[in-house]
Image: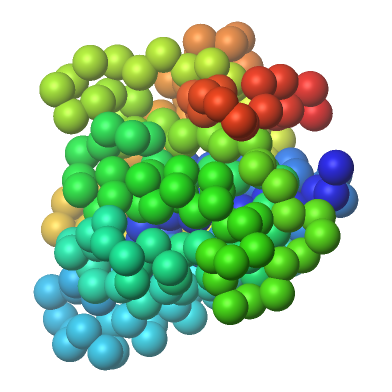
Length: 243
């Protein structure tokens, strides 16, 4: 199996919150890593216009990705208005066609905001069909496969009704938590807005709290948690656990 991982999430800082520790471990193990966001985060500001903040946030995301030698992609869908339709799905399929991932991370199917849920659907659809020869104008890579698919924790580890999510897989990120925090801190436009609003560095601390909480469930200092998609024809072996 080729070793290419894709984190396909809604906003430019989602990967750093949800799965960056695992991405760091994969890079350290020799994997090729791609980080993609469906949007440029054009609504993540109270100060800038949509074009200014989009430029700022994509630069921040690229900087964070470069910290671990990852490649950043953006589908440039509108923030807060991601939908599951034919044009957006084609963008997602084309991304998967270009990357040809063997391992994919995306949002939980049920999460606190609809952008996350729509991206989860897009990732599921694109991961399934991107290897079909006629589905994209981009050349099909010979290593294309139905990848291992993992859903990241929803925010606070709860579904929209407040029910706790039970992970299938935990990844110990105790040694990666500081680098993960540094990657997250690259998103200065979001961090500074929240610091001004909350009066504390809540942007970083909320990530640390959740990592500690998941870590306590496995007697480690910090962890990221996932639910593996195991429906037909996806691989059923827990690849992350094996690694």
